[in-house]
Length: 116
Image (cartoon, rainbow, N blue to C red; front, side):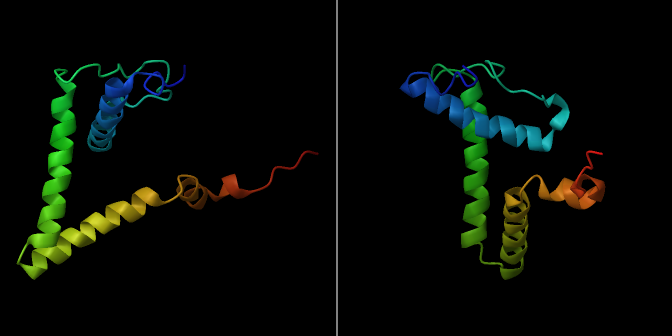
């Protein structure tokens, strides 16, 4: 399988998919371990609740919860505005189509090749 987590049993599948959120968050912060092909078990499955990688998953969810909590419930209007601006900026930039940015930065990729 290209994605062994998709064919795994119920607790393993959910634990692994949740760990992928933590792994991808780490790769956004520290992209030194990037790989061109994340298939065929390059990310080992999280098979039990006692796996130490679950701590990373909990840490990411706790961080997201804290940021959202502060964005909604902070009384200081200036802090709330700045936090919401940064969160929305990250959401907008992450939702852009990945092919849009390289084509606008490198316009030669937009040209139609001639087959003559």
